[in-house]
Length: 312
Image (cartoon, rainbow, N blue to C red):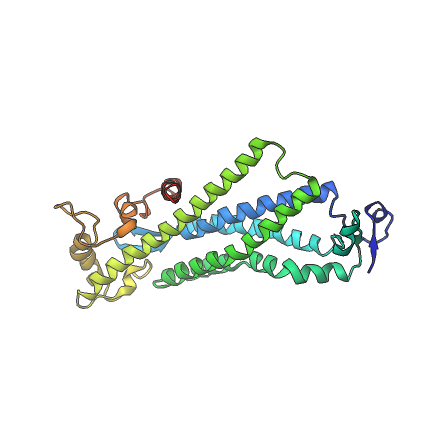
């Protein structure tokens, strides 16, 4: 094992980084921030589906939001790749040397990457895979009919799947920062703000999933109405198929049936369809394309905060 003390690493001819170097500590802190940013960005993909009522009642994808979220996520992933490259050149303290009170650094260029591959490489690789970008751009180049449903379902699975490796990496990284710099936050206020940020992020995530499930609930009502109406084709529930045979029948359904059976409250003050916890999303029309992205985000964030605050 090639092991040296920290003061000897500077005299080494190998291009190995000291894990307690102040510059590397700042990079680790920046990487932690990028992890938090990525966790905040990923739910934005769930806000891209929306209900459009511009002459045809259908579910579509907000192209502007989808493009912007894809660009930001790609920039964050680029920083992730830089961090992965640094991990292959960062020395580590030999576990067996810690019992003597003074750790020895392992600088062997074969053992360092081998250790990283065994521990965190798979989680980092899964985190950086551009799966939501691929799903989004695939839709933007197809943008027809049931591609909306496929994209919506794919984004839901991808966002949930990539949350696991991202969260797995945050805890050991914050622990490493505490060990190398002594403290994680410079002041008590910074530490309180850090944990408050996590609470806001949790509310943001819950609100995003609630929004997407609200879209699902609306399409459930449309499906029920479509089953009871002869000649209905469900493909017209998704934007991009207007002008095709059968479209006029769908317009008739949206005007005569859906507007009566899928409204949250009719003239009697009751709802023909039970939306459950998604009633406020339908009543407020936050799922409609006419609502701005900021209004949509703030409303769902408020819903997430209100419901997380009632737990326990």
